[in-house]
Length: 559
Image 1 (tube, rainbow, N blue to C red):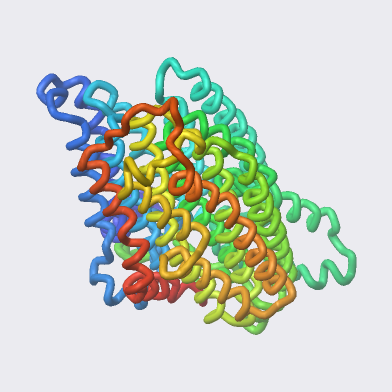
Image 2 (image 1 turned 45 degrees about the vertical axis):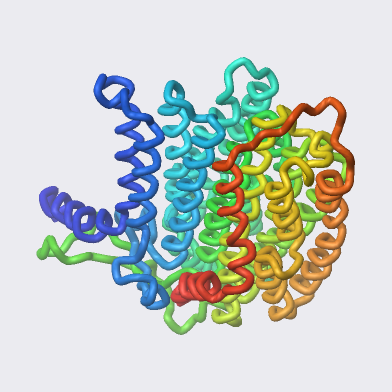
């Protein structure tokens, strides 16, 4: 074992294995650096920062496709990057596509609404792409410290984005609240990470599950031994859950969400409602799979070397091959499923009930976002339960979540785009000021009606496809927990009809308010709204591309 051999192994792993699969994130980094240099180099500063941002995000999106094409996505083998810090698999590919496609559409939206102008555009796009980079890391995290790094990289730019408008007291207040809550949640999460790593002797996610299996938790619980270790593990899991719940705006860590959405711009609220949720849900899936269905693949150990510097030297935790993982990890699966299921049920119920009394459209959609986070957490509870008994069912549960996320992107993007354009046109984001828009802005109003119906989950719109996929998994699991979650989700869907209908009623049936002036939107905003709303029809009529992509992405997740 020599220092030179260590360096050779690291260089080999980085250049030949990791970097070729990490191009989208590298392009985002290069775009961020270019935007920062544009302020310093005179020639670069003459170029509209929108061009740097749109070219960079489109390039990253193009590079996010698998090397062998999407036709072989279901055969994509799990590959660990940077000595196990990140992982490249079907879920990574799918989430990259979702996040980067959304980033492209968001860059275009902010240009059309004027939020990112030529003077302040560099700052806004640097923050937007920096947060997107952090979310891509969250989606592929394979190590406890990478989890924390990704969460912080996504969170810190988001705090600034909420308060990006100068001179707005409400925006500054919302950003401050968001930052304070975020700092507290990050501290609790970091303490939970340190507990897990200290108790199990590893920070590598798949190895966590293998180490948990080594503890023989069923025997410890039955014999009442090492209760201190069990209590510490439960506490560590709760603390890590606090950080994930904060990013998901799950109850009771949702306090920042309505204030941040109302205080910030509609564009930023749309970014947080889609990208932040997608990354947090991906991270929750990663953690759930790590402790409930750990991959028995070896962890690269660059500290242990072979004579051949090009060879990958690996070691695995010692465990008996005669002991199946489903037996020692049964208490972990029950605990994780119950924890996620309870939080999901409370979150969707609270979000729908709290949305009733809202008069601000962004605040109402904030609670709608909270409710949808609860819906999307339910299949993850099914993943935890099915991981040991039915890997195929667990893969289907993950696929249903990915389908929901693909549909959710267009639903919320369209909703917040409409709000942003109407804000510029009428200067208000209050629901009552949307009265009579059917006569002055019929196309945009029709699109808003489609979005509200899709959020509710009414066919023939894609929102029905997402909810049906998630609810079908709960029914197929057939356990008391999943059936209870199915009933709660169904009742909440009916309840949400009231506040979605209120928006439709105001825009279509109520007269125009006397205080509102003439409304002028222009052709470009209308075209953009139509283009991001159209997929809600197309994905329902032609669901195969999305559903097949999601199912292929979920394949190979379980050993």
